[in-house]
Image (tube, rainbow, N blue to C red):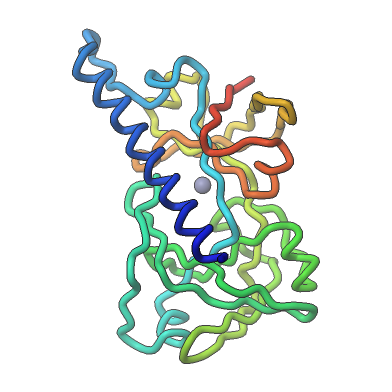
Length: 235
Ligand SMILES: [Zn+2]
């Protein structure tokens, strides 16, 4: 049943992705932009509206660790493309374990990275018995490790477990549109019955980024939002 729910989830995500790109296409075709400014997602969703992406627990693997877990030369099967360019979810999963417990079917995201990084939920920390800090992706110094179990082998990480710090991806043109810069800390207004204002959201600017705020599933559930919702930046 877990797998059915997951494939349904990805179908919904695919549907939303498709709808989003159609909206963008229609606007570009019917209302050509007179100025030289490129059309960004910010234009499509209205000023100060940010699309939401919700991340469940997942793992990024180094090539060395892929070889240990799946065997040298293993090629992953792509499940879907993610909204950030060049990022994929694979069909394959691993099991992660700490001193107090195990979590199965942890999704692998690609491509491979220089260091393996495990992004877990706060409740996973309690279940596994590890105290992963709140960090931005890539910032894994002085973080706890865990055991990762694959189909052909297992590895013991001495670092790499984090709880992902909420952030907004955007390209330089979006950043100009919103009047923010890389690493700026902003607040977001969350719509809905359980909504509110969340602080300490880090802006991350890169040419390759697509405009999207990333919350983890626990944050999104607590705030009663889904990937349908749009958020507003409050500086
Ligand atoms: Zn992200």
